[in-house]
Image (cartoon, rainbow, N blue to C red; front, top):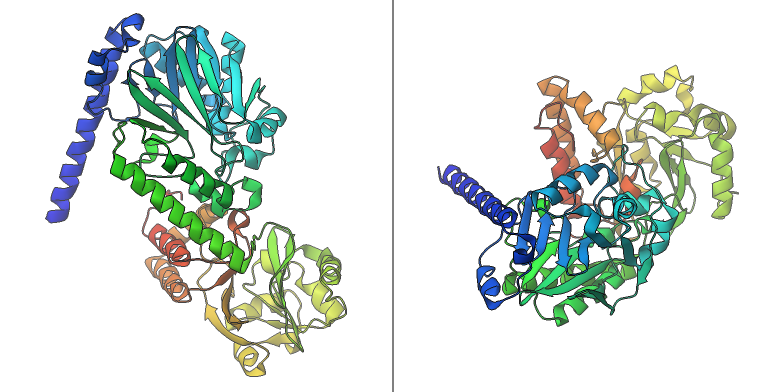
Length: 538
């Protein structure tokens, strides 16, 4: 009963905030443009009240408006005596929505004089060229992002980890590169530029004083009223986040006066629309939490290395090598004093040649291959296995349920090794985990190596990408017993708590090292998806 009552109160609060935002918008529409720009003490008193950042066009301060119906990022408009200044421009596909919202606020897009980009991500930048063509607006961007904007690539620089296949990228003409510290003048309006790298190299915040209010436009440095964009600092370098630069940015923000109004890049991320007016304690707490998070991350990276599984071969632990990717799969090898153990054999007929070249690169080319430890007998894991066994005469470790699939490939029983025989061989300290999978013979290997727990688990647990979503739909189309088997399999994985996780498809080139409660969150999320309908996407 208490939970139901809590949900009712939360729903009422959301409705109330939406109504408040709608009333603000209605008032903005009724006021003539000149009146909206008044900066008197009366305005200051008027805007001391709450203004919710709802997904609507909303006036948040005198002459400052949120185009909140953009998706996924918001766009903001500042009125000046020299014309309109936009902070960010949304996606190209959102240009129609941008124009409609400006019309709702009685703002003429032909009067746009400048577009201030907070960073290069496409949901903030790709709409800028349409505005430039229509109004001749000058485009400003941080110098660290200016070149990728002008180049129109790579795609990772525009969409990070988001899968937006229908959104095309293009070059953006950056007219002015910003270094930070500039004060931009647009008639009677002065806008302070804050260099804020970390989410991307060229991330930039903007500060304007309007009606006696200090207003900060946070971009994705501050993504919402409750969330920083620090996720980028945890990801592979190709996504251009930087933990150390981000930490300096947060210290810089914490040393500045607390803004009266915070306008973040993604206010729609907040489950309950946040008040645009800044609560000082909440502001300080958010920055302190981010500083602590980045301090901890930097310490981990310094201690354990930046072991991103991004296609670039690297040694993860002494003897444990990530050889890169082939055939859409990551390849790992473990060299003990007397054995050379390979995990999976993807890549098709040419896999032995690819493997030879990579082993020579890491000074293991002279070592005979002892065995291939299969994480499944699905085609992604075994497409290179027949030619590899023929060439090296290595043994193949699989589960009992995988034996028949390997016989179908023509492998002789004399080369097949059971998981029990693997444990008895004493090559490594390893435990095997039978895993539920849509592929036959799925196994996880829990290895104690160099004082670390290493998990090699193939394509489990499910990840929140297109492949994971497709697999999820196949699972949920099965029987209740099959779904329960997956849940139980994931519960076993939950107990492993590895220091290093080596999947066959590293999501977004992730770091091999698992920190804090990262593994628990990842597997718990996969478990939660198994309770949803077959049409659910991650």
